[in-house]
Image (cartoon, rainbow, N blue to C red):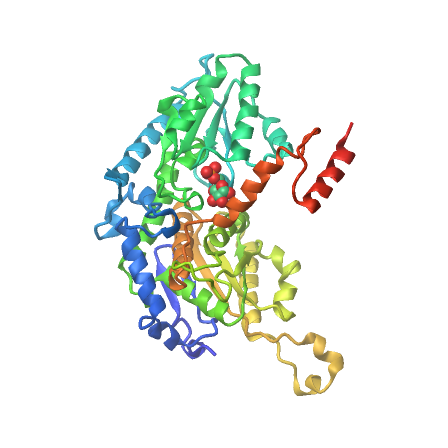
Amino acid sequence: MNTSALNPGYLSRSLGPVHINLDRQLYSASHVLNFEKTQAHQHLSTFIQRMFSGEVVNGTEHRPAGHWALRAACNMQAYHSPVSLVVNGRDELALTRQVQQQMETFVDQVRSGRYTTPDGERYDSVLHLGIGGSDLGPRLLNDVFSKLDLGAAPALNIRFAANVDFHEMKAALASLNPKTTLVVIASKSFSTRETLHNAQHIFKWLDAAGPAYRPKALVAATCKPNKAIELGVAADRVFEFSETVGGRYSLWGPVSIGVRMVHGNPVFNELLEGAALMDGHVLQSKASQCIPTLLALSDLYNLEHGAASLMLSPYDSRLSQLVPYLQQLWMESLGKGVNNQGELLDKPACPILWGDVGTNGQHAFFQMLHQSKIASSVELIAVVQPDHDEVQSHQVLLSHALAQSEAFSVGRLNSPEELSNTATNFKSCPGHRPVQMVFLDSLTPYSLGALLCLWEHRTAALAAMQNINPFDQWGVELGKGIAEQLEHSVPPGHTPAENPVTAHLINHFLKNSAP
Ligand SMILES: O=P(O)(O)OC[C@H]1O[C@H](O)[C@H](O)[C@@H](O)[C@@H]1O
């Protein structure tokens, strides 16, 4: 049992608006101190140095990981030490800074009404097309920013269409006017089937309003500028980012240009400042003081002691999209079967991340966490200062978060009389669930930036400690390849699918969808 129960706050750490408490983890305080002598620590500190020097840390794709440069471009001072990202002789940090300035200029033109529609009107909306890392980040940012008190109403509406399921597109288009909508096509590769298919649909939608609209409406965010230009996006509206930025680490840059248009450059740059604070902390801190490292150390300990699940519950409804966003970051990064040497892993490297906002989750799935045999760690996020004056509501909310933290840890021990009576065992809650709390002073673009960057470093740290690559996703490629072949098998007059079960399923679909 954690000895810090005798010394509350021993495993608390703070950085700017972020405060964590690990007193209710199941390891002893010496576990943290001894970590610096382990091989996992050696792997991690080498990884951090290599990543911020632009060395190859993504072995299977032979690349550095340069997502941090999207933050460094806004504030190099926060890093307190030299950082660099030169790839094939090109200074990607300088390129990032230059693209950021171009984006800011364009965003200001749109928001001020200087960049107009072919009819000389203001653009009033943005349609964002993109999926996975080119969707979840901007969607989360827009959702949170829209719920914050930022002092001004959003300048434009924004709608998102990720899925090739046309129901989503239909709903997005219902409130948009093709004459006054800017279309952002966000795709790192500019070859993702869903995004390109949706783009073709949108081209028809724009063209139906008249031939002048499409050329002015298109904006692209990508690592493949030539592909965007070939598709008809004007070169000065293609915002490029580095190949070294993984899709799920890309929300800091051009893929969020639509969010910049809606909420403005200053709000977005505050997010980057909060993230840069966390980057600087990771570069400068010893493991025992470093917030993302300590959280990853808990994750590793819990994983090694049988907790294959991590339930995350933010006690703030403005963070309702946090879990879907983090699921991609976490599970695409850590859901791996081999280490950096290609050797098969003998245990899972990734706890399943899931959850929902509190207190809602308490009335849905917390029961399983309290009493079932399924081992899970629990993380609760609470925001100290709300953006409303209903003090009592906030106190009730926070007391629920604190109560759950205590209940998961302490449980409910049956009295001796109850223990001797199986008829009352249903009340027993064993406790001893590893539970940790994360507090934000208040929810702002700055604190959100620090929180999301914390999660990126925590994810990469857990990967480094286990010697796996958090920047590739070869499993995803398998499904994409099969889907490409099956597109020829689904239409009538199809080439039959080779796999007998797939062929059977296609027949069912064809029989039942025939007019
Ligand atoms: O940005 P794109 O190249 O269109 O990729 C979109 C998504 O595609 C795949 O699903 C990858 O697994 C994701 O990591 C990526 O974010």
